[in-house]
Length: 415
Image (cartoon, rainbow, N blue to C red; front, side, top):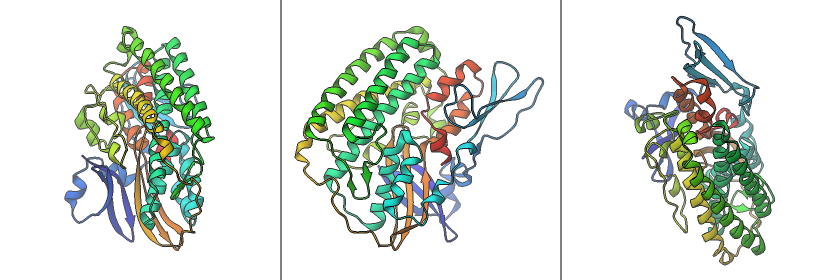
């Protein structure tokens, strides 16, 4: 499929950043038909911080403002919910509380200096942002990346996917009042973060990746520890998952909640688990060559339950993927922090990463080693819009697990 990741405007010219067959490319806009191919073109073009900002009127209808700091909203963000009582008639989202003008912060930085900025956009997706950014730099400057670095990036992206999926699924269990299940999942989430630190020195995988290289490769002892630990995490999670799907109360809360059709998901520009839960396969697993190919997990119902089930299957596949790779990783002998000449070249390039919640894409322009222009496109931006849409016509008690099922973050969406 063709996914419009973002729109680039430079020197009065417009280019479309499109992902197809796992490759991101820039296409100059020559006619209106190119724009009309994507129903969500205007959403990405305008990049408004107030999503679905329409008002609703009628007998007894009022606007209920939820946020920016309140129970159930874990970041500074605000929901505008129109209701006459229990039913949500229309939901809008205000992202402006987390808008930090991060793209402007990239300008006049070297690529090495800017990696930390990419990681700081959203800590939960720090590695995905770092990988997408460094791939954009490497493509812009035609930097050849060692296969060992590429393989480790792929492994660490799955490491990030595991702890994020555990986090989302634990939040869904908690929102659906499954407190015992939520406690067990939270324990696994903490175990995954501790394992991150053992492998990389960082619980949230920060400071590991860099342009053309890595700062840290785990020791063989820590690799063996990871093989054992991910095997245990997978087995423990599978037991919890099988138990949870036999819990009728839990399934009833998620089933048919926040349902999107395949056509709606595509028209909103979704990617990742939220798209695959609607039965649509994307190409994100092929964004770079894998030694062992990951399967693409899909469901067809398009509801909160389907989004949870996709994440659950992906979590177990990611554990298996990491275990199988680490068993052969002792053949990857390279210096993780090998000295690289300063990057004083000029160029433009784009890069993508398959984050836990969908495609993250970067575009950068570099002049004499300094970044002159940068654009960041995240799954949380279109995901927030879809989450708000899916809340319409639901009751307030459905709100937390519908929203949480999309795995989106205000910091990632607002940038």
